[in-house]
Length: 259
Image (cartoon, rainbow, N blue to C red; front, top):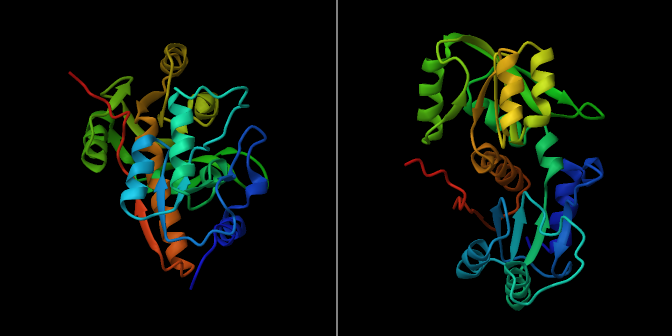
């Protein structure tokens, strides 16, 4: 079966509902030709020069990103900027871009479901309510464990060093996860008496507020906390008989380097 760009957008909308996105979000069609026939799909967190070149080298003409290509108002374009070069590379290679940001964040089987499973959570529920029954993050439980032991399990599951804050000997059982930037959810975690919040992009005073309220923190990294949502997206496309080459771009340019 052949798929046009517009077909994929319509298919995504039936499951993830672009109308549910945040007012500040820009999920949906970003650039390209809605009538173009798709040769293959690349799933990526972001549009980068490397991800575009990866698509080109694999004869792929459609990239579905988590973070929108166009987010803030464009007031000018500098031909020497990285942003302009990305747009030029996309247009020269006739690559179409679709973005699925907050609709994938709030989807029951999106970013946070995969993250919660990876973090071994049972009894999973919505963490921060949004609207129409949807929400951000998942709160759940593990069998009572010492934080240090649980960190070892996380390190093995994610195959990455784990950045944490809090008492390493603390006993934990109630855990919340939130893919992407999760500092806004700290007060929710405190009010729900969560022992550990796993997310990313925490600032100094975010950590201060958490520790003053006996809330341990794991800063997993933005990329690391969201990449699994693209796996769920791939599974969805396959389940809808999108019989095209579908690749996942896993190169993390923001990978932590701990000296």
